[in-house]
Amino acid sequence: MSFVIGLTGSIGMGKSTTARMFADEGCALWDSDAAVHRLYARNGAAVAPIAALFPDAIAGGAVSREALRAIVAQDETALKKIERIVHPLVTEEQTQFIEEAASDIVILDIPLLYETGKDKDVDAVVVVTTSPEEQERRLAERGAMTAKELARLRSKQMPDAEKRRRADFVVETNTLEEARMQVRAILKQIRAELNNA
Image (cartoon, rainbow, N blue to C red; front, side, top):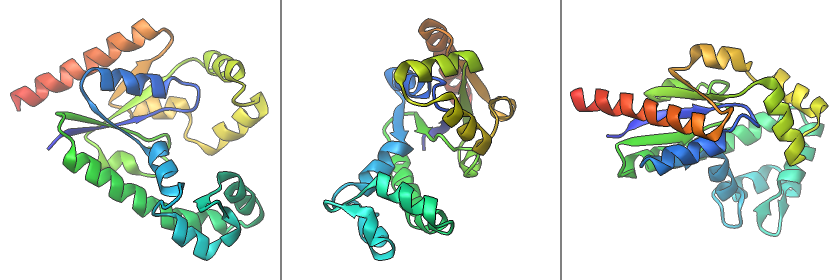
């Protein structure tokens, strides 16, 4: 059985880049956002159950994220109903990925790891972080989010300081080189412990 690391961090912290660094070091990488995209795609496992509840959320045989957002904005019970459909399907895919992984270490890239309680299902948690100023600069550069949208997102998520406090390991992504050195150090420590177990 593989050693399972939950990788998390807020938007703009460098989580996707850090996840690729772990993959470059021979870890099997599973991405929860990509899993949801597969479930929502045409013939995806979530399409039929969501269509049964919210027919307006379906476009071209797939779940439209824009339509879902509009439904959730209008109906406060909608999000819970959608989560009851999607979460078990995501968990099922994740479990299968871990069981079939050929690597000694599996990375589960889960943005809301702590918020969904998934931190209890992994062997260690790695939190990816950077300064608030750097986070804002990256998001502005990408055109991904306004300062107001970021403030709203931060209010809904566990604060970065709390995530870092609860983490087994922290990767600071101020520079790519720094981040890569930290990833290698984490893997060296875990692999040494696995070899001595």
